[in-house]
Image 1 (cartoon, rainbow, N blue to C red):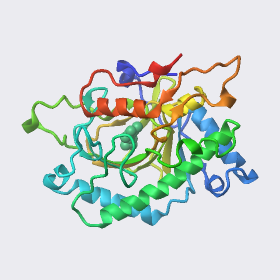
Image 2 (image 1 turned 60 degrees about the horizontal axis):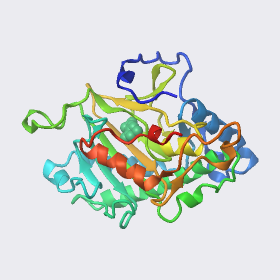
Image 3 (image 1 turned 60 degrees about the vertical axis):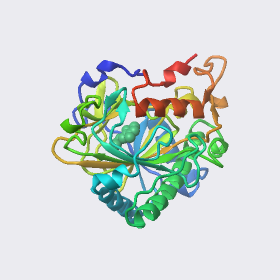
Length: 341
Ligand code: OGA
Ligand code: NI
């Protein structure tokens, strides 16, 4: 399994269709309907294989209505084109990570992008903070809330498939999410122009990447990308393009899934190239456990021959550490390898 390392970005990009081929595209219609039915068996197997081999796959027939997806795109583009004063009014702070940000750091380099983050309604249980909604049309909030709820349903179905894939009852992990999961949505805007140019001297240098390579911290990510391309996953010494697929979501497993599965499912390292010709948008939903969840390898993947590879991870502690590192240069970011036994 590759570790995060400085020189990873110098590895070559695989020629399309080369080597291990493409990240699989999986029809999850039967999984959404009833994960335990015989009809879902094939898709469950494909998901398990994709998580082992890539940590990434795409899903179609996922049940999220196209009109909701279209509306989410419209609101996202409209928001980032608002004047700076509207966006700055909902700027993220150290105490409250929700809202707008144009200075995100991954591995302490500034990513060339703008983001807007929002979570469930009410006070979130990790930061004790509430969403910041901008003063734009009311549809922004209602549309994006409906979108969040729809992708949450999809994520819960996929979680069931992960459980069945490691020989556990479908609802085995539900308790770690129910009654207060800490998932959140990020609207990503990757502009061709650096949003912080010369007048903002004093910012860390911009990386020539949209997002520096990383693994996602939580359980799984349900990502909508537009048709521009630029998302790449690292596997076997190559970067592989995740080709935009109309009507599909890109799914990837995060660090917590790697711990639960005791390294059977990997949290794949991925990145986004910087945009040089066209602006790009994406909308990931990071599906994360409850604040009080304690993550440890699941019973079916630990044995005398294969002992647990990780000590217990407190999700709130891990997530809190990662966010601090994203906000400002607080020294090395927390990584899951620190929990390895
Ligand atoms: C992320 C991420 C990918 C993309 O925000 O963690 O990996 O395509 N985004 O925007
Ligand atoms: Ni990511």
